[in-house]
Image 1 (cartoon, rainbow, N blue to C red):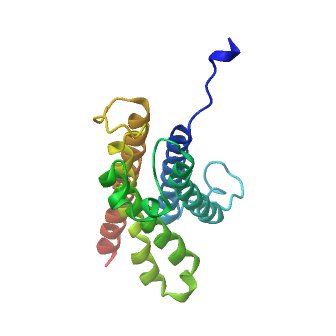
Image 2: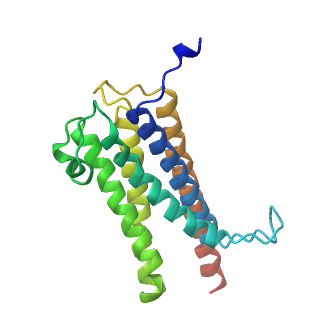
Image 3: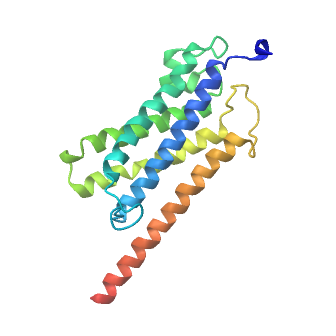
Length: 197
């Protein structure tokens, strides 16, 4: 019975790490939306001193490291045939070049968001906020990559109701729903300001 156990391949591990990265980025965006509306965990749930901003930043660093690890694991696969250039410029990668290019673009966008956030003191707050909106572009491309890419690298058609795809789709819906709620809060706040004037 123990002989039937198979170790996961590098492709399997890379797929799971990619799903973890998507979960981290989803959580980070949701936390960022909470921060943007001035959510205070002392006055509201959990009624404790929680450093949401610090947690949000660290999730960004951990998410970036996880997203970078996701394709690097493929270098250890005997069957994938990826080289280092295929990871960073996957347009000519041996498998799924379009889907992998989407993943690389998302990785570059997340890197931009993390680096500009780390250096945010160099920018005016308004400029930094405009730069930070590229996180939504990164999320959209990451979700698209996660849905379109075949996790087993066999170029199979997308199975929209596969558990991994439903997870990615759920993360995308959560971010879209929370973003719509944030926009609604902003519009209501602006209407109240106009009524006061």
